[in-house]
Image (cartoon, rainbow, N blue to C red; front, side, top):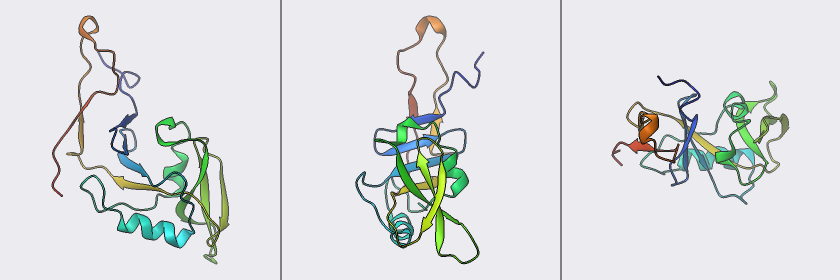
Amino acid sequence: MTTDTDTPRFIDNNDGIVMDLKAGLMWFRLQDELEVSFEKAVQLCAELRFGGYDDWRLPTRAELESLCDATELHGGSRWYWSSTFCGPDLYCAWIVMVPGGTSGYQHLSLPGFVLAVRTRDASDVEPVAPEPEDQAQPSAKTHKARSRTA
């Protein structure tokens, strides 16, 4: 019998994409050292063509906060832009520390890091069922990727 603890939440595809099986999302971290304004972050996500997908976007505050333990996505703690504005004046947006989940807000012109996200389709990945204990392999990140059209 398998339980939720038997299946990892995150699967690193080793191509820059990390699958979040719990939230049904796919994550892609743009260049580690690239800090940009909010407007540039939105543009980079909208123009991203990676992994055969063209529907990347800037994540919401809630989506970023769900990554508080996602060590698969970081090269150190960083403040990432969210698409969530912090008030009706639209002069600032929420930023979230990943990992960690701490959030704050900053003016749209200030720099922040960028994670792109997209909603997974059912055909994006099919996790392989765990093998019986006596035949188990050492890797917990085994998965079978389905083909995608570009």
